[in-house]
Image (cartoon, rainbow, N blue to C red; front, side, top):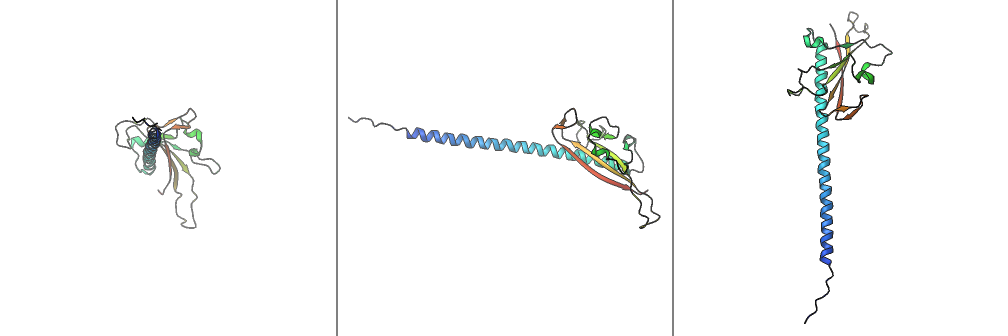
Length: 183
């Protein structure tokens, strides 16, 4: 009669090692997929905010350039002309904190993304006149042009801010242009 040989358990050790490797690689793959989701969501939020800012910038540029003003554009407030030693309004945090009469929110009827729902944080812009010096050496009869700096902000749907206006979630995109008008 044979005596059973003593088992050494090598199969159990190999199986446990393989299971640990599989668990580790699964967790790495899961973490990578989650990171990709977060990156994709952030890119989408930034893209929506950029579209909103672009819409606000174009809307306010059109209100400055319009020869005839529509009733909606009458609501667009222009800030007083910027003095030589003044800080522009767009560069002052308190301008954007809320309640400033010169910060123009796009009307609810203006849907930049084609949706029917009004955004929680509508895009906004600020129009401030700047003074340009005429160049009589180039053309002595040239009129002094009107010039404006237009600053626009667009927000992602998940944008949120603290009481002092600091963003806490979502994306905000700032765009700026300057417009010169010879009339």
